[in-house]
Image (cartoon, rainbow, N blue to C red; front, side):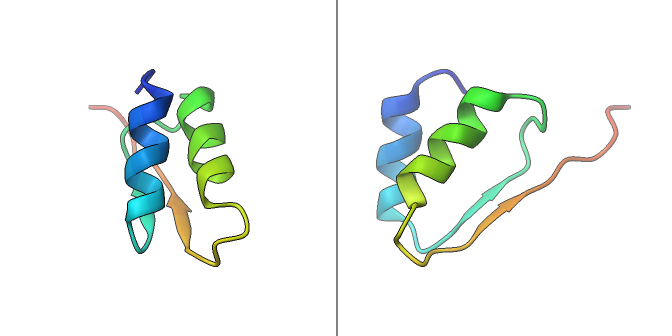
Length: 51
């Protein structure tokens, strides 16, 4: 989650990003948003309760 280069590279190579790993990891979310900005690709950010 902290390797922003990997996150950005795979986001740019993907048709869309669905992020469900950790809703509180701000760095990852900001990285995805930045990588996808202007691409028209969808970004879905969600998380559920931790049991």
